[in-house]
Image (tube, rainbow, N blue to C red):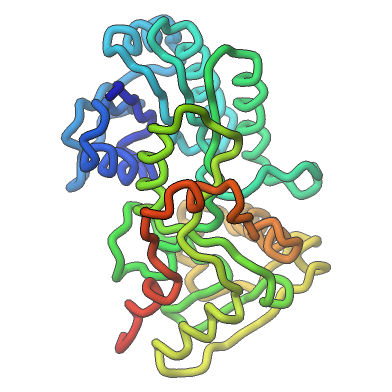
Length: 311
């Protein structure tokens, strides 16, 4: 048993990981956050409000709490949040008790081709480059696209709804590529189980790959149609269209514009569409945490989508 600090542990992915750590009772947990927040599902573990920019303070906090492993679930979306994670890496490096660090990503691959990168990936890559220069053992998770989005609001999740490719509520789909490319999905509760399991590994690899299920968009849409009991309005976005930064707008996108500008959403999701079309969301089973921990039973795409039956 060691002490694990979850940075951003009151946030979307962070709360789910903290809950899994608490349930496992395998480690002591503290939660690091930039501001006080109140949620119905606030963690039972100590929540410490910190200023990541004060590296000396964070270093002392890690040492005084005997933190062995830092898990960053900070949402790295801009330069400011990127700097917060870099400061956290610096504090962990200076801490005499801290030996391991999981960098924030909780999604897909980091493209080698710079033309395929989403702007915020620059800041996540900066963290990796910084970690490479430290003595910390470090990694990052790659888990594909979150399956939670396709069961909301009928499945338990701490994520904020965000539609990509399939809008089950409005019986519509804008499928990237042909729809036959393999797609990797992960439910956040499954992800959290793999995170807990990975903490017990004697040695980490980079990246840590895990997933709940793998299928295609065509099969997923067919399941959605079956459970909703009617045909969907389906469009296919070609590689050329996606390359131009365009996608077919889905009805549920409008609700996202309050926190993601339309142009930014199109930019992000057109890149995601290219990742699908180029097979970059098809993660291998070999070497994955699924292979290492076959006892972890994950949910299927159909089980999530089935929550729409009769809706």
